[in-house]
Amino acid sequence: MKFVVFVLALVVLLWLLKRSLGPRAPRAPRRPQASGDATPLPMATCAVCGLHLPRHEALPGRGGVFCGEAHRAEYERQHPPA
Image (tube, rainbow, N blue to C red):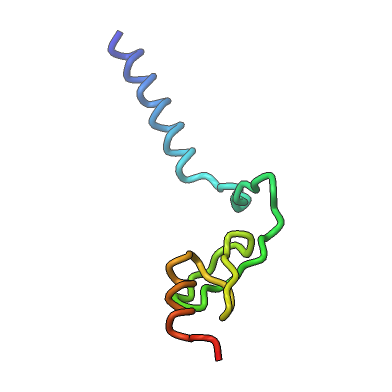
């Protein structure tokens, strides 16, 4: 019985050794999973803080586009109409 266990352990050891030292096929690089909508969105930059956000989420104002109502009000308060 000891002989069978010894031979089995030897076979497993040789198999692991062959597997770790053998030539490996190069793996193809992983590509990121594409979402359903692959087209980029047009972006806008807030005139106060410089935040980039999708153009459809930007608020238009007198001095450009803004990321929120607070920045639009701040800009218009600092730059009164001439």
